[in-house]
Amino acid sequence: MIRAWNNENRFHRRRFRLGVFFMLPAVLILLVVLAYPILASLILSLQDIFIASDGIHGRFLGFDNYTRLLGNELFQQALLRSMYFTLVEVVCVVSLGLLVALLLNTPSGRHAFYRVVLLVPWALAPVANAVLWKWIYNANYGVLNMIVVGLGLSEENVVWLGRPWLALNMILVADIWKAVPFIALLLLAGLQNIPTYLYRAARLDGANTWQTFVHVTLPGLKTPLVISSVLQSIWALKVFDLIYVLTKGSPADSTVLLNYLAWRETFSNLNIGYGAAIADVLFLLMFLLALAYIRALRPRRALLNGNNP
Amino acid sequence: MSYTFKRRLSRNFIRFCLAGFVCVCLGPVIWALVTSFLPLSALTSTPLDLNPLNATLDNYIKVFDTSRGLFSGLINSFIISLFTSAIALTLGAMAAYALARLKMPGSTLILMVILATQMFPAIVIAIPLFLAMSRINLIDKHIGLIIVYLSFVLPIVIWILKGFFEGIPQELERAAAVDGASPLQVFRFVILPISLPPLFATGVFAFIESWNEFFFAIILTRIHVKTVPIAIAEFSGQYTTLYGQMLASAVLASLPVVVLAIVFRKFILEGFVEGAVKA
Image (cartoon, rainbow over all chains, first blue to last red; front, side):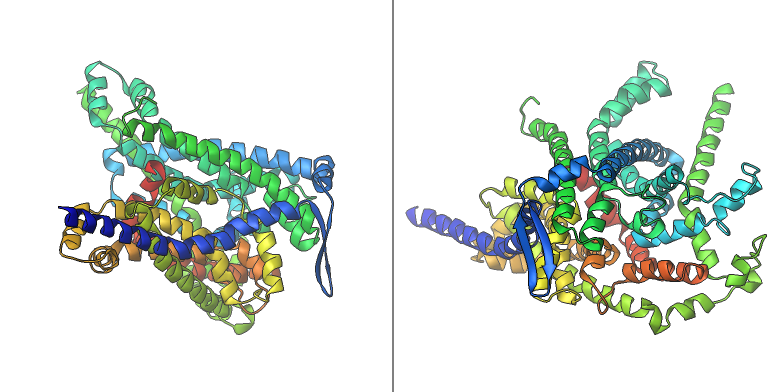
C-alpha cells in the first residue's frame, strides 16, 4: 500500500520534472523574442535614440516623445484614419462574413467546393494580394476602370489610388476582400454549434425565416460574433503590406495609418524613440481589444465549470 | 403548389448568391492568373486583347532572371520557413504537452499570455529586436529572421497542439505508465506516434505563416536573405509597368501556400478556426 503510494508520488514528481524540462526551451525563446522587446520598447519610447559610428546611444527624455506625439497633426490624423479604417473594416467584414457563413450553411452551400473557394483569398500571401489589387486598380489598364467606364459610370479613367479619401477606401476594399474568408469560416463553425432542436422548436412555434434568424441564430452566434469583431479590429490596426505596396502613404500622407507611421518614423526617418512611442500607443489600443477578446471567451468557460456566468 | 414554388424560388436565389460569392472570391485571382500569361503588348492595348493565342510563358521565364531576386527569394523563404516550422514544432509540441498533461502550475496564465501575444503590433517588438540584432550582427542573416519568426509561430503552434493533446484519452498514458514507462517514454512512444498527422498539419500552418510574413522581413533583411514577399514588393516598386511579370511573380509566390492550404483544409477548418471560438 505504502509502496504503491510512493510509486504514484514518484511518478507525479517525474512528470513534473519532465514538464519543467519541456516548457523551458519555449519559455526561454518567448522571453527573448517577446518579453524582452516589449519592455525594451517601453524604455526606448522614453528616450531620444541616435545612431553614431560607434553604436547606438540614448538620452533619457521622460514623456517628451508622447507629448510631442499627441500634439503632432500627422499622428492625430493617422489615429483618426486608423479608427475609421478599423471601424469600417470590422462592420463590413463581420456582416459580409455572416452572409457568407449563412450561405454556406444552406443545403446547397454545404458542398466542400465552396470552402475551398473561401480558402483561396485567405491563403494568398498578403503581398501578392496587394500586387493583385495594384493591377486591378491600375489607372490606365486596370480592370476596375474597364468595368466602370464600360458600364458608363464614369466618362474617363479614375485614378483610384491618386485621390486622398478614395485611396484609403480602395485599400479598405482590398483588405476586406482578404479578411472576409477567415471570419466567415469562424462564424460558420459557430453556426454549426447551434443545436438544431432550437430551429425545430422555432418552426413549431410558427416563426418565419426572419424571426428564426433574429431569435435563434443571432443569440446563438453571440460569442463568435464578438470574437470576430475583436480579432478583426486587431488585424485592421495592423495593416501594413497593402499600404506599403499600393501607396506608401501617398497621396499627401492620406493613407498613413498608425502602424505604417510607426514603421516610417523608426526605419525611414530613424526617429527611433518617437517611433517606439507610436508603437506603444498602438500596443495600448490592441491590448484593450485583447482584454475584450479574453472577456468574450470567459462566459463559455464559466458555463462549462457549472457556475452561473 | 405555391409552397413548392416558393421553395424553388428561394433555392434558386441561394444558387444565384453562391455563384456571385464564387465570382467575387475567385474573380480577382483568376484575373491575375490570366494576365500573368499575357504579353505586355496585349495588356496595354485598348480595348484589352484577351486572345488566348497570345498566351505565353514569357513573364514566368523572365521573372526567374537572377537580377529580379525572385529565385533567391524563393530559396530564402523556403529555408527560413522550413527551419522556423521545424523548431516551432519541436519546442511547441514539448511545451504544449507539458501544458496539456503534465499539470504545470500557472498553465492557464501562460496560455492567456500566449493568446495575448497574438494581439499586439509587430512593430513593438520589431524596433528593439532590430537594435539588438544590429549589435550582434544578425541583420540580413537567415538565423536572425528564424529567431524572430518564432515570436509569432511558436505561440500559435503551442495553442493548436495543446488543444489536440487534450483530446487524447488519458487511459492510453495510464496504461503505458502501469507497464512501467517513464513520462518521457510515454511521450516518446505513445503520444508522438499517434500525433503525427496533427503535428504535420500544424507544421504546414507554421510554414504558411512564415512564408507570407512581410513586416519583419523588410526590417531585418538587407541584400542576402530577402524573402519572396520582399522580392515581389520591390519588383512592383521598381518595374511598375511590367504588369505581367509582376503578376507572374505574385502567382509563383502564392502557389505553394494556396496549394498547401487547400490540401490541408480539413485541419485548418477543424483545428484552427474552431479553436479560435472554443479556446
